[in-house]
Length: 216
Image 1 (cartoon, rainbow, N blue to C red):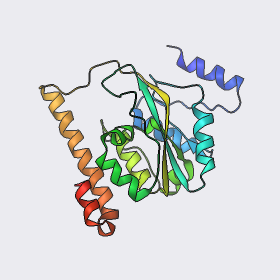
Image 2: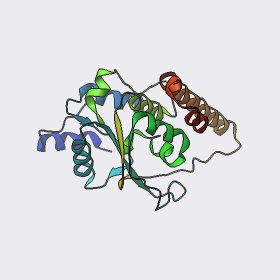
Image 3: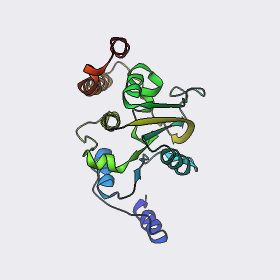
């Protein structure tokens, strides 16, 4: 589709743009290549079939720089699939790591927003110092695992009530009674257990009983 030629032309026109090529090894490998070559203060991800709202960078960079203790700013998304969100679901929050992670497991809207690495701005220093990478062994849920690993390295997290990402849904991913979809549902269950284990490994001994009860 001439993507390479388009990228090279953009690079020629704007020296801030870098272009790297590798054979298709999946989305995790591509993102990891980007992380390896990134050298700015922040990093964001955009899937190849989605798009950003025009003001996304301006808004989220200003937000993360206004609060020095903040390591992650999350924002909302718009989708052509009305099953994925409702107009009143975008929340505005600012929390410590522990408080936010408790809500992560208790609030389905927050969990869904954090299941994608594309709905936030990350500090590159944290990613590189903690050797965070996308797991290319996972065919589903690699985003959620990466975000959880990053959250466990954060100080404060902010969610803003702005929809800045356009997510396009081209196929029906709802689970049906087929062998393939049952396997995908099982993989999602395993992923949830993996995220739960990572959280409790760090916070179990420091949680009040009422917090444990909520998360369980």
